Image (cartoon, rainbow, N blue to C red; front, side):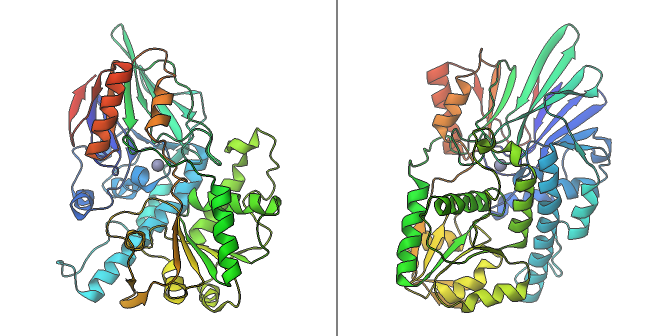
Length: 459
Ligand SMILES: [Zn+2]
């Protein structure tokens, strides 16, 4: 059995790992490279695999950096099943076509602005390409073996990162030898708002482990009190609370917080708008799989858990524009989370110059984004080619991340009954990988390897 690293090596996007044995080969995760141009360019290079001959793709979870390359794989001839948990399939049905649409928009925008080096900039894939790839999605039942080939089988188990995320354990019987390869996907946090704790693991021969927060700790803060204070103060000033949020996971966390504050009488009676069709649809999936959330088993009433009573879902673009002329205080949740695009941009033009309003950044803000500029104290930012003055209050709620920090990861690893033969550290920037490697070696004395792009290992 051979393992090749086709992404998320020394970086946090593009997760793709190829397992091959004889005539069989499988891809575990099929993510898009995102962020820096140099990384995004890799999405255009052919993979060192024959897509038409791949047996199957196995997905850990729905995030685009783990699934967003699927339409390309299908365009290049892959016809096999794409195995995933039922919620992951529902989320992919929303996220992949949306990713295709955004890429078409970006290509069109580059063409009209003329800033692309290409005469006619192309989308990596289109909305239609993405829709075509969805037909191959095949649901997998948790905790049951799935035969992949004679001697090779896979088992999915809940992992606790976002809705639908799973660990994938691949068991291999080879000439009197038995071993397993464990794909952790992204590791969630303990005691998260809505996601379950990372699942327990006993024995693993080869472990693929993420290191996104390998050198960082999430701040310990009371998010309910934080939101309560921000909302109370903004409402007292008569302003709007603008919350840019990622459509999957972050939006549902915020709705959950608002509902809980309301239940406890800590939310002023102001209208709340969810202005993102993708986030609205993703919230429906979260409701459909309510039994997968951590609060389901501890007796919390699950009805309307993502639905504060004054919430209005804004589907139509025309209704979205209406939100720019609201009288009085309101809470507006919209995407994108880093202010790269989406409906939130229109609201920025109206409410960023308003000293009574507050913009609440709720997640990681990558370099080069408007979100980062605001975090760094920009006095004005460009939106749709126009300068927008920043007079609104800017708040940053850092503690809602869906990734475990290094303490969460170490806690999870300490639950293993015996050390893996090899732990491959992936999905992290170089410094985070180095820091986590050091911690695992010092505290657990495990054998840790940091693979590089396209590295191949015989298992
Ligand atoms: Zn993820």
